Image 1 (cartoon, rainbow, N blue to C red):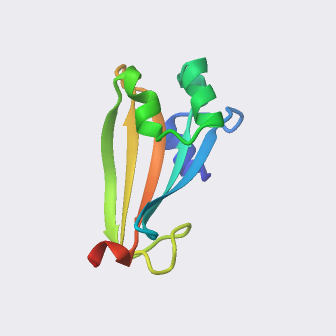
Image 2: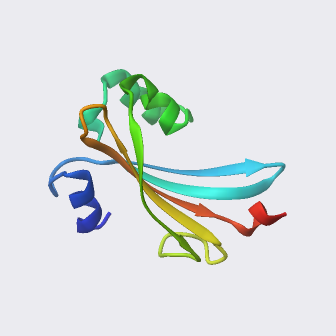
Length: 115
């Protein structure tokens, strides 16, 4: 996690962050990969338990908090941390209803989306 990403999430270097890496697949083909950094202190104990012990999607787990998704940027091609054949990336932040950032996600879409 870079200092830039910590600034985006408005957390100090000492504040713990959670991390999830997921792959979205269909018919055995990976359509996308996502890297998700989140601030556990801004979530409920139950949501943190779900994120640590299950494979529930992040958005579904935090849905009761009424978050909003803010797209930060999109780009064709790849960036560090995405597979070399990535065709499109999105970076987004999820904000709680009070405006505080709770998650930073980078989504890497694969060529399998074109078939």
